[in-house]
Image 1: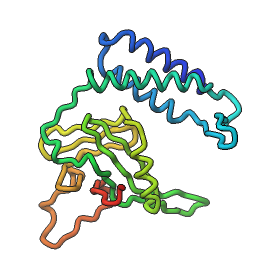
Image 2: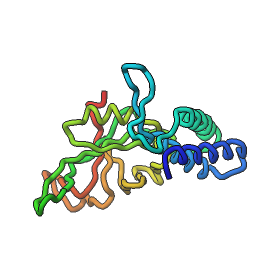
Image 3: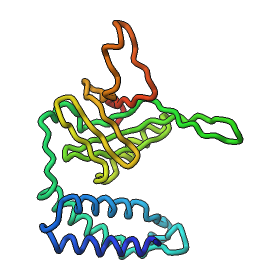
Image 4: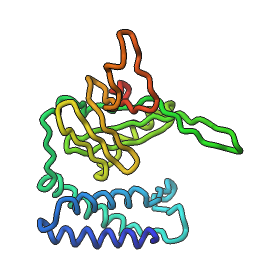
Length: 220
């Protein structure tokens, strides 16, 4: 499906949902918000600084600016209603998470093969939590940390990423490509499979297979 048709489909679906409020289940709202946000995000266009008009990157099947503007407007209305009236996220231990700062993972390595040789790519995940139960996530090379955090903080809420705190100290994160079942320990979030009783005084837990989110001090 080309981008213009995808925009029109989302415009029609969002319009129907807005007219049917509040007669549908909240998950339908959330899913539509998620697909709207992704459609807007991946619609490629750029500003031409010479004449201040929109020039599209690809010549074929590019959406017109009116469709993008209309979907953004409808999506904003749906998001406002959703957050104010529908979505009920409650947790008793909000003080366990820091919503003002960004969490980052341990250094991970993505191994890419070229002509039979492995090439390692260092990778770090950056996560921003929101009190309404959603989180945004991005990943990049560690040397681009400042740019990554800046990009993360400028993103709209990704309604496809959900976290839950089912009990004190526990946390579950779920997205299309990122899942974690862990525990909140101070300024860290650590995979629940790490058993502290396996370690003695002075031992260090360093396991690149386990995702650890750390409070980032350079997120300004």
